[in-house]
Length: 94
Image 1: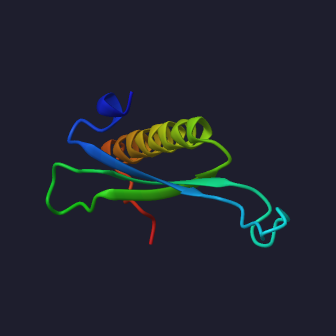
Image 2: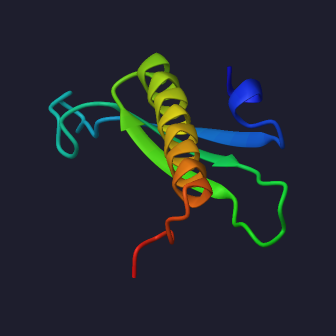
Image 3: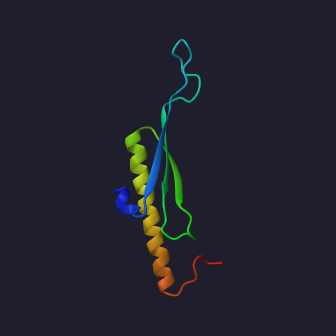
């Protein structure tokens, strides 16, 4: 799916953050485990910066789903911007 949404390439890094526990097994830091997913979508035009995002989720699956949803949102917003420019709008409004 991401290959279709990011035709110029993409990269992701998954980091697992475990809840801190002391020697007795009691939680001392974050109250739950977290998955941090940093991802980058590369752009073809050198003048445009790569899209860089971070999502936090309770599971790897949830993090990957959030990544895809975020990229779909980016795509939808790009189409809105292109349509507005085609209709003569100055984008973004000053």
